[in-house]
Image 1 (cartoon, helix red, strand yellow):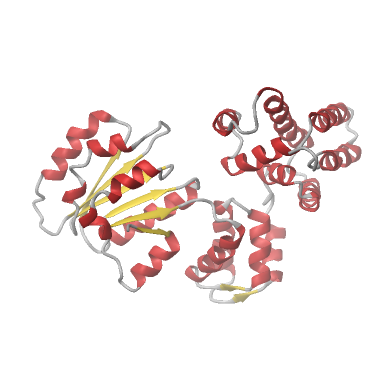
Image 2 (cartoon, rainbow, N blue to C red):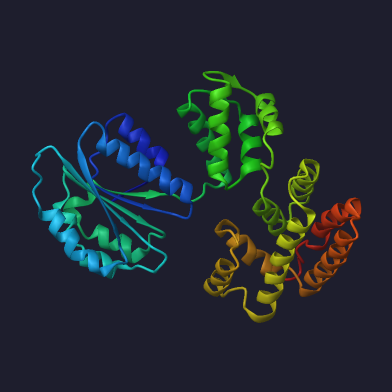
Length: 348
């Protein structure tokens, strides 16, 4: 079997020198983790060695000859490594593309490394790599999907450890609830903590102090996520924070919620909740964050059109108040939105 791990596990293996991988297949939906994993692999492979790095698109058929020629060209320096980074563009890829570059796999060794960066590890692609029975121990699948809550806290703890400070459990829970799937913002605040409190044991007070000094650590995507999850307390907390900071205009918040509700109505009226691929395509078109897609589909199946129409009516009334500059009522109306969007438990 080919090893299937996450970045943390790869780091642990390398720290105790238990790796002999020549081919790294990194995949997932989180761009921060994909970039972080790619950077870690390159750093591990290249230091302290000299190397040549070649970057090609898996979707560009015209580069096959270039890849073949470079792979077979002997370096003038015997110790010089070759690293091929082959990445997926937005187009679909399947195992037929891998078959066209199959000449690369048998060539991999301690001087020729392959990094494949793809969106999804399909069964076909997985089977393709498994077909190299004698080389399986040199291939590794590295998952870079946004961590679920139970994996996010260990991720935060490890990140803090890497930055040379420690956090307690309550601090981790606070960070994970505020930043959720925004690993880039999460990394930034951890980095700030490492600079302000180097080599210290931090508690929730340290975290809150920094958060209070950091404007707009909530994002609109967090707000939309609370609507889809029907998390009333968190919805109100985010709105209160946005209102207190006064950095996000009420109209921006309203428009974002309005777009989400309009999409729900559009899908509810015309699409089956089971048509996931078509719904995801529509959500991509309207730039809805990928991490919200499954929540959107679940909400679509559990809410009635009547509630969605009532919500749109309230938002239209609120928009009129914005033009009349009735600020206090505007924020109260926005907070009332969540009350209209509870799941219809009889609608499955």
